[in-house]
Length: 187
Figure 1: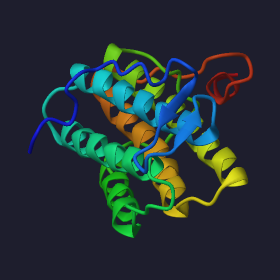
Figure 2: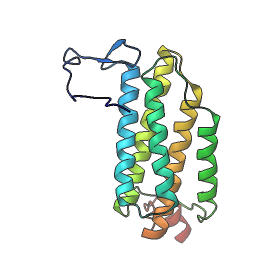
Figure 3: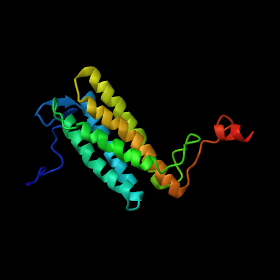
Figure 4: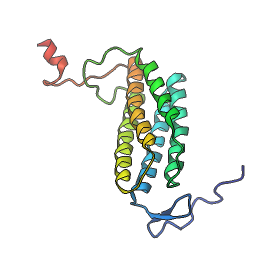
């Protein structure tokens, strides 16, 4: 394969637009372009999380997810293109089910921290939720692939489960206030 980019800067976006793969240009604050940027941000957050996670199934899952997110980006930069199908969604569901079966029941809300790995997975989860909201907003303006939204929704669940799995190694940090169940159970 030849080089896709011969130089990083093109100056074509200096006026506030960006080019899509179909050759059209959109404003940088266009809902589609916002979604593309947020998917890119999510992928970067997952990359950060991967830098803190040891070899194992979680790492393999996240590496595959990064490739899926590139597929979503490719779908978004080509209006009308559909790349994400049911196998993407069912793959996430299967991974989540397999990981979740090993976890203890959830007794309380979990604070998004405890270690760098756990915190970075929770950060990725919250960015994933923002991507989902942006995809819903995009659907208000133009038709998109509903399975992409399903994928992103399942991914946020999977990121939560992966954070819990990582917490089982690093220690889960629970919400602990006078309103939490843990304190009510102890009273």
